[in-house]
Length: 464
Image (tube, rainbow, N blue to C red; front, side):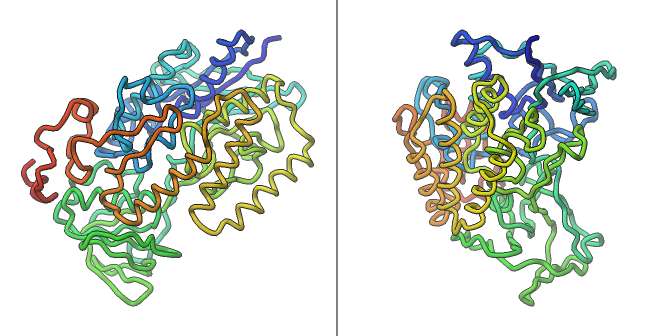
């Protein structure tokens, strides 16, 4: 009987799994029966910004936590597909830090070259999953959002590729419920124009706080305060930006911090991360983990320990993204088809514990980049995924982190070299700080009213 594979989610991880099977088919291998369920009307997951209010046309919560004017906050050279370069897609060099729409076009470009869209059921959301130990089969109940009809599908293997950046984690702070200004989670942030001239408090000290804070500075916020739990980010912030230890409580518009300082604010953004939530899975198959580089209970970060017919893609914190999803998908494919034999439960657990022990001892961000580099190397070495210079990418991550430390407002203007093609990125026509049009057309075709003419950011915002 033909192997039946179900894939839940057609974002970058799910597309990687489809592409992994397509790569095998192109090499003459027989591939399983594949069916992928995607709740949105198009693929792309986080990158598919076809909405603005947090719900799709059917009233379903959307996957994405992206927002207007979002540009890549890491070099594109660190996420490049080794079998589909940026040069191949765009036909010419581009800058190292493109906006969302440009990256979405690149993601789509690879899968659109493959005959994989036929495997995806769009506007279809997974509602419930059961597993029959006797038959070793998954039964997945899905709902067609166009017809409101439910149906069941049976699979031998199930791939969870929904990501873990769509269910906010929102801590409680005394007095925040009576804060008179706007309070929102980063998940609900849709653009920084609303914060022009306002005093903004960001609670959190990771990528969301850093990026939304600097987006708000770019769009003319009067001040940005970043409140951290454990340690400050320590970047060379602009003059209107400061870091404070964690908020203890709110009293009216005033936030009080644990160092005894206080400040009045117009708005609060909770950049406090996301939860692993898989409402379509029973608890015994749902990953429960903080956002870490190597979650427990996943062999090679992919295979569910208690049921090796269940696979997770993209479930970890990420330095690497698209190419890591590829490496995971190729590995999952080969486990599913029997090309990779899994060791015993005990041996798998021993391997997991080795990774967890190493993870616990990581001293800094450079070590974390090397850790995830070694993780990818192990996956790629086990499969026929096209290899690339992982050590060069790890060095790119380290260079990028230093550039951010030295110039938080200018690091997106730096240029990096592709490890896939050797092409050096080209300088973008407009500095990121002054680029007010994030459309692909403006990005590719040149400057207009957002040209880098020396105007200050508030001047540019006011002129709009």
